[in-house]
Length: 155
Image 1: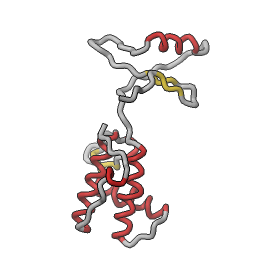
Image 2: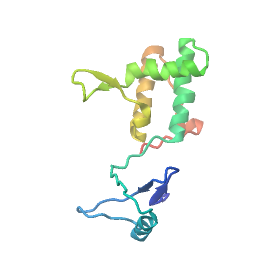
Image 3: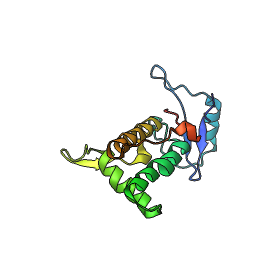
């Protein structure tokens, strides 16, 4: 099992601290490193945001979606392989068909769920919906991701 680093520092000097609370108590894997990060912060007011960790889709899932799923739909629709046609398939056709969800801010209305907000598992379920739609419209299927070397982890 690959170990995820406790702290992730990005270019905006933000720190991401991974922990799993147990019985209402913090449970840092490496508390000494956490304290060191706090010591290194400049003397200024800081904000700490705590949110539930969620796995994002993998690069393999993203590559499979754009190179296989989108391309298969475009080929069946007779669209040439271009960036604008890929965007049309993703942002218009498939969005309207498969990613329309209730809008909790506007009762009775819907919105399009963006794929970049999906977890890895949600994204693979979305790809599966794409395959069902492709089968219904064109009686075809996509090659299995694993057979093409794509990572299909369902985190």
